[in-house]
Length: 471
Image (cartoon, rainbow, N blue to C red; front, side, top):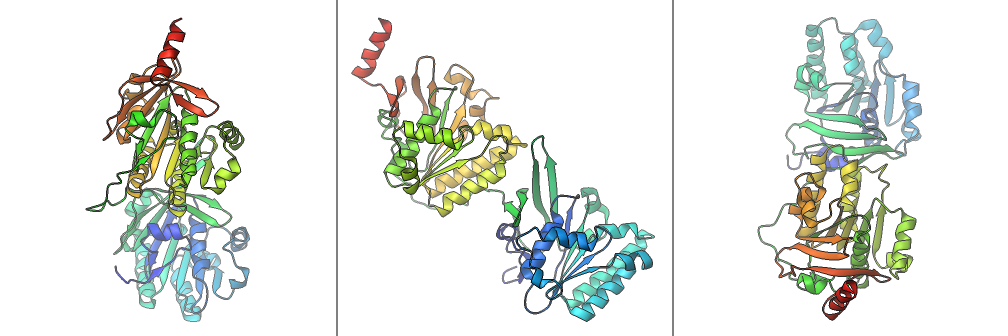
């Protein structure tokens, strides 16, 4: 709702997903299995909103001991010891619940409201209260009275619990909740993927789907799912070409690459794909354009050596706008990388991007369709922002036809590319398979890799080379 007061999560990305934060005076469920990050999320909300005025109350039920919870909290940067006992009040109501049953919850909450008038109340774990309930009827009665009490007092409530998706379908607290946020963990062989998603946010718009995050010293670092940009009804088409930096290639493309286009550069190992990508970003730097080279194969030292091999001063290139992003393929987390790349693109006014190589992203993705959607959305953002990009793809076949087979990497991503350039090692040739809206050359051309990078042989140069080979 327009103008509705919001409660910040303490995380700008989470607030973005929630359309500005949680609506004030709402009842929300934060659900997830143990270790998914739900309690850290709730605690981050607590310390973000603690300050002058009404305090915040954190009620621990039958989960972990309060001393252990606070001790763990001290590891995070958002923790502020000076707020404990003043604007942040922790209370263990486990003993009262064990003695008086679930009905004791009402007495504890009412007493706390009368004593401290909290603006936010967190109950962790609310799911544990089901173990104290003698019947479903008793639980519903307590929940009804608790909802009425909290609504009348006008406080924002977070019920944290180890709920499952089946619980969400049958337990009564989900019916009265205004908001539901789910935390998930997907264990992989070398790492765990963590996601959050909003299942419900009454009266508010929010960003649907799974949003990756990781837990660090600052709390939750969240990477909102990248969605395709809204295209304006009318916009100016950039009638401008971007030089590739590869000698002899631009004339074959009709003058270079259209600004804002995406080019798929494909070929087997050793064909010169990385060299082509580096030439492309170095040409951009020479023209005063900020560029990103995202790489998952060569480590930073190997990449620096390759840049120096092309005659570039690495530190000078960085000062002039070259951004190098490296992620080990072992630790590569696709959501984090794509969103980090997108943020870099916006903050540094990036004009050129190279992703080397798409195959590593596919190997790291636990959900191929999710990766496809991410890359498609990213390419659309490139187009809208006038960013010229290259996607490097390694092929295993010997000819261009292998690139477009149904199960090949290139086949899955070629349709979203404006241009496709195929490099081969057998005869050191380059072919422009596709160049949208360009009168491109249709022949395969000889090329060579020199100390200055890739070079296309044309005219008499190519004829002389062919005669030498024949002889």
